[in-house]
Image 1 (cartoon, one colour):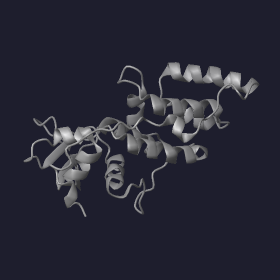
Image 2 (cartoon, rainbow, N blue to C red):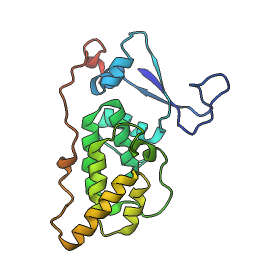
Image 3 (cartoon, rainbow, N blue to C red):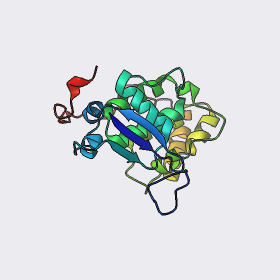
Length: 216
């Protein structure tokens, strides 16, 4: 069992310890599962003596959903049912960990809830920097999905909410398409969920060495 220490980006750091935080959330997961599903964890856990991992700038709720998915292939539980933007956070975390199967399950769930995008309340802070140009390579599949929602939705508050996550050029382009769509509904439409999937590559990990057969 691997102990995973998760530190939120807004948590105060302890003096003299740049990777330590006063607020740490502890998770546990089998090494075999982590390495089987994520090449990132397979790389981080190459050392057979490695028993702990520290993840900085990571929100605990989406990471908890990642752990839930590892064991149950599910995105929600009785304790927490993620909303639209919570699931966007999970998608981005799966992007960081290179787990396309989870990303595509999230897209399936998001696609079913496009009418339930939150209209009120504060937005989670991490998506803003993740999706803005210049912060990191743009996660194209999620950007395209949010773009198409902005273009096709009739709810102005939904557009306003998504605008808080994306770069100005994307907002400008979406508004141009939206105006054009008002004249011709065939200009652009929301595709099927599979249109926004991330390709699932056959990534080989050394599952035998981490004891995949020991999970029951």
